[in-house]
Amino acid sequence: MNETEIFKWDFVPHQHRGPQQQTGENDHIFSPQLHNGTFKSPGISTFMGAPYCPPDRNAIREMEAKIAFIGIPWDQGQMVRSGTSQGPHGIREASSQYFPYMFEYDVDLMHFYKPVDCGDVPIITGNNNRSHELIYQYITEILEGGAKVVFVGGDHSAPIPAARALSDFHKNGKIGYMHIDCHLDTAPDWGGVKNTNCSPVSRLLDLPNCDSANICHMGSRNALNPKDWCDFFSDTNACIIPMMEVVERGVEDCTHEIFRKAWDGTTGIYTSWDTDSLDAACMPGTTAPECFGIKSREAIQIAKVAGIYGADIFEVSELSPQFDVSMMSSKLACMMIFHYLGSRAKTLREKGLIASDF
Image (cartoon, rainbow, N blue to C red; front, side, top):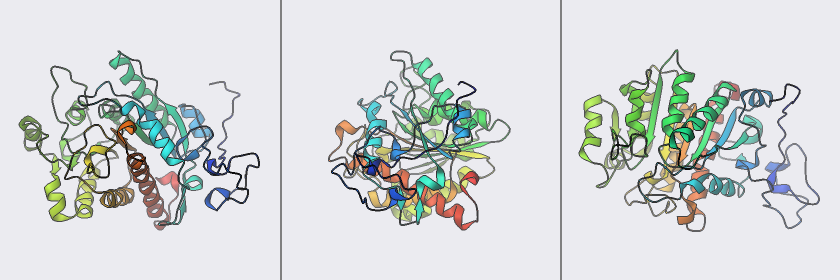
């Protein structure tokens, strides 16, 4: 980056773009006064209409961003059907349908977090190792820039380099990992290949500062998990709450438990949320739609509890818009993020803290 180049956070509300653009400081949370037929014109497509910022620690710091969104259009680690490379585009498009004001928490996400969109990680087709290294570098730049990461994949192998970046960022501490998925993702390898969407949880044990006691899973169900995947939890004493237990105990109680365990004795955590954890009836646009999953109302409850605890990285993966119906999957994934951020803002405010204490 050129040393003379100054990056300033400047939000132009996407809901109010047009020939007579409204630019008032709080126009984005009210009904438009200069409606000209382009109420939801997306302009440059960014998440929530946030300003673009290069994935550069100095630029992020200068813009004082506390949240940085990033897309990982990656599906080369996919073992089911492809399509997750379109996930970042789908969720950006869905976010243009909403105001950044969350009345449930009375918070303007834009002015509370000063979020930025750092674009997509460039994927090198056919070179998985190089692509993973670029994911690692982008996540590292955001963390070093003082922002928390919100990223959308991409298949569920993307957490492998992302968790490594978080591990290195907390090299003097410990990290925890929260995994919500209908699959356990604990394969030591898949046909001899280590870095696939079947293996992000097992790869955590390759990190020097991630203890199995801080690895927590919720949502596994149906005949989707080989016995060796299940044995991982009994062998390592990691926490597992299958979907059957979620139904019996209630989603909020289970979510509180896994976040408490993930945070116990750690300095930061990674929340990884696979969209196939949700029931196919409300999440058809995912790579592995399955019945007997989390309902949309329960997903919002999970996001709300997640916001109470917070995370260094909040990831939503396996979104596949081409299999969606009426954008319902992309919009639900978008609301999972919105409610997480809204709940987190409310929690910080009630504690007398600000976004920098995220």
